[in-house]
Each structure stands twice: as C-alpha cells, then as structure tokens.
Image (tube, rainbow, N blue to C red):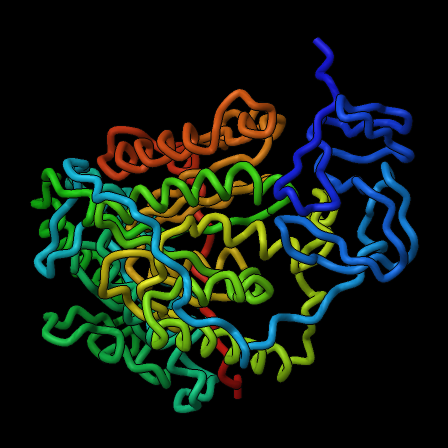
Length: 507
C-alpha cells in the first residue's frame, strides 16, 4: 500500500518540517494541509512551510537552527547549503537553575537481576577485565586472552567473558601534563566498572611512564604481571604468568550470582551515533521518556557528547538542580570550546556526511535533537571526562561526540548498560556492557532486523507514541540488565575497541 505524503512538524512555531516517506517525495506532491512540494525532498529532509527571505530565521524544535542563505519558496527543499550557521549560545549569559522540575512521582517496585559487588555497585554482566598499563604489551595481552578464553573460561561457567582493556596510552606521552589526568583517570575507573566485579588485574611492561600500580584502586590486592620481570624466561613464561593470575580471578568471579536488585542500582549511559533528522523526533524523545522513568525509579542516567550539546546548552542550564550544577555545565562547555580552538577546529566539523545525508543541516539542528534523549528530569550532577558517577539521578557526563571515546568514558563513569540510538545505522557494541540499539526509522529497523533491538520509527508513522516506545525501552533495559534478554550486539559478539580521550601532548 502506498503511504500518503507525511511530514513532521515538531513545534507550532517551526517554519520547516521533515518528510517522513521512505525514498522522499517528488515535486508536485500535495499534503493534506495543502502544502505542495516545489522540489524533490529526500526522506528526513526539511521542507519550507512558508516563504523565507534571505537572512530569515529557519526554525525547528521552536529554535533557530540557522538563517536562509538566499530566498526560499514555500514547498522548497531546504538543503544544507541554504542554512547559514548561527552563533553559538553565549556561555556568560545563560539562565541557571530556573526551570521548575516536573512533578513526577517515584516509580517503586521495579527490579532486575544483577551481580552485587562488595562496594555496593551492581553489574549487569560478569566479566573478567584485564588492564594494560602501556600499549607495548597489547599484542601479548591479545595472545593471552585467546588462550584464557579457550583454556580457562570453560571451567568457569558463571563468567560471561574475558576482556582486555587495551589502549594506545602509557608511554611516549606527557604523563604529568594537566590534560593527562583524563586518560589516567579513565583507565583507573574503567577497571572499577561494576560489570568487572572488582577483580582488577594489570599487565605492564616495566619501563613505561604509566606504572601499573597507578591503575589499581586503593585497598585492592595487587595483581600485576610485569613482562620485564627477570623471572620470565621467554614469551611462554610471560603468558603463563598472565594465565595463572587470570585463573585466580576467574575463580573469584565464578562465585558471583545474580540477585534481585532495585532499578536504582542501574547506571545507564545514553548515546547516539549515525544520527539523522528523525533522531530528535522518534528515538531520542522515546529514550528521553525512558530516562525520566529510570530517574523516577532512582537510577543513575548519564547523557554526554559535548559538541552535540553545546549549541543547545541554553535549554539545559535552566534544568540544573542548582546554580552550582549549572556552572559546572558551563565549565565543561567552555573547556571544550578552548580545546577545539587549540586544535583549530570549528563547529562545522560536526555533523558528519552521513548526518547531512540523513537531513541534519548543521550542529545546531543536531544538538537540538541530541538533547531530547535527556528527557525532562532535573540535571543533578556533572562529570568531567572519565570521572566516576557517585550519585543517583540525571547526570551530564562530558565526553567528545566520538561514539568510541564516549562509550569508553561512560564505562569509566560506571555505566553498566548503554542505550544507543541511530538513524543511519552502526553495528557499534561494547564488550564490558550490553548495548541496546534503537532505530529512528522503521526502514532501518527492517533492513537491519538482526542488529536493531527497538524500532522507534513507528512514532513517525503514528503506529506508536513516544510514551509507548519509552515504556518499551524501560522494560527492555530491565530485561537485558537481568540477563534474560540478549542484545543483538551481544548475540553477534560485536565489540568496539576502547578509545581513550587524551587531550595532553604526545612527546
């Protein structure tokens, strides 16, 4: 059956809308409201709802996303080159903690089956993680991991996996430079992720700048293998030492058992990648609804990606729980502004070609859609990159927009499950935590039927509401966290590499 022409208008003040129909719509198409297209408009791209003079504001989400580079007729396709990038919000004049928090009652009685750790945190997986202190040993670590999985892991059926916390840091770097605190803190906190159960072990070389002892939490029994140890007579001895240490830790982890835990023990990371113009009207709002449910249930929820928040920061600082939290948000935005300026990068570096093909004209439009996944709850805390979450509620965890760096930093912040929305599609996955994938479009969910876990595209066609998909996500998070349902990424064993954020110099 041919679908009737559909567009989505987000806000009553918008003067553009996006085309819903798969494959786009040809010129001459008439909508029920009487709007007639003057151009072919691809799916997800904007159509002018009124005549726009050159310099006129282009409004989506009730916000100015740019100005018209030349006159635009009603019914015309507003493609990327027609949208001039506006100035970013001024960080010195933002409202702080002015929004009235929504009156949302607590959600009691929701639970999941998780692994309780001695420090009170809860894992959704039972994984042995082995850190390395320097990239020099990564090859040896990979060899040892293969042996551990083949020879040791079958003996310990309660352990889900063995993961090398490999990275490209540790030596040849300015280890005492101010920016070095970010990668070092990230590595320290990755080893403390709840899904690793506190069984921390480190493989080092011996001569590196980042000595292995710096990666062990205070009070933890040292479990370190140093490859330059003079007791090692060749490669075989090195690997044998790693296997011996892993065997002891696997035996500890094998004693862990799932137990009923309140939903408040979840630490949920929210992320988007391969975004399109539907992200801000289907998947992200649905995830935002689920985020509000999680907060009401007492959980910790974190959203991230500075460059995809910066141009909508004026909508977030009012939601800060207090002025101190609002100033912390501004601090992270300003830090990243300075970081980008140091690298001679500008805001046009984001979005990607794929984002643009999916209808996102610029970073302002992308940011307005991105923040939708934060829901409506008050922002109660702000984390600098790699800091560990220590409180419940909605947190802003500052990270770059890179999927891989963002995921790594969210794991360091204590994320035990992640939800990832996508419009263009990505097979992204994490070894340390389950990743639930949400498609913005039904077309993508159908084509990638064995990679996408939830189809939020039903919102665009009216088959489901934001509330419907939000509750679906909330319940799925509990099922996945309990180990009762497996994500497609885990089914296929899709594992993106950990990627450190290192703003310090490399020597």
